[in-house]
Length: 219
Ligand code: TMP
Image 1 (cartoon, rainbow, N blue to C red):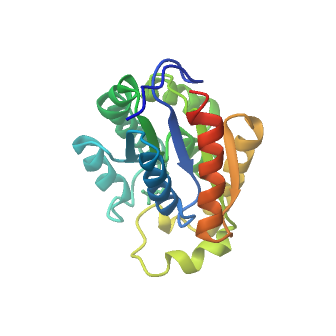
Image 2: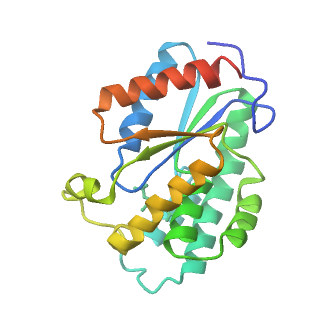
Image 3: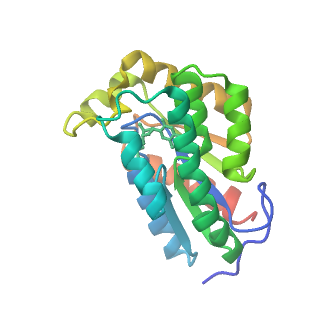
């Protein structure tokens, strides 16, 4: 086991690496591969998904993604995603950072900016303020964006039953993708944008090289 990580962009503690992208962009596969690789190098790794990752946050996830919640207002949606995140940050992420573990997050606050800000077209400034409360101002050391055209995800998602968010439609998902690219462009030091049309292995190598050289060693 390696010694704990002591510093980083988001303050004292283990590095927080978030993965973002539209539905079907391949985040889960890449997170599992990076976890395996980092553990093989001797690091303690914690993987969490959003919304979820604690018993309470998983209950909120059910409410959010259940197609039965079709009357949910965009503001309610924003606050529920943020509430699930607040619980995850306090219960799992902060303790993991204090132990010096590497945290891999399948989505974080940028999902709310992309989906509820750009996708639902709610005011971005208000969402940013909400995220400051939800995350206790914790920002990822690195955010990996698996970028993919909306059309490319169609085949990938076909086999599953679409949840409430996946039913939001193509124009919505296009705004989400464009929103992610704008967020990444505005903060290139934090974001690593990956062309997710590549095969799984080269993507994994690109992420791993970046994380090991720029995040793990520097932390
Ligand atoms: P996933 O676990 O399959 O990625 O599903 C989560 C869904 O919720 C996905 O469609 C993205 C969406 N979402 C938001 O709209 N806002 C958020 O803040 C988060 C974390 C997810």
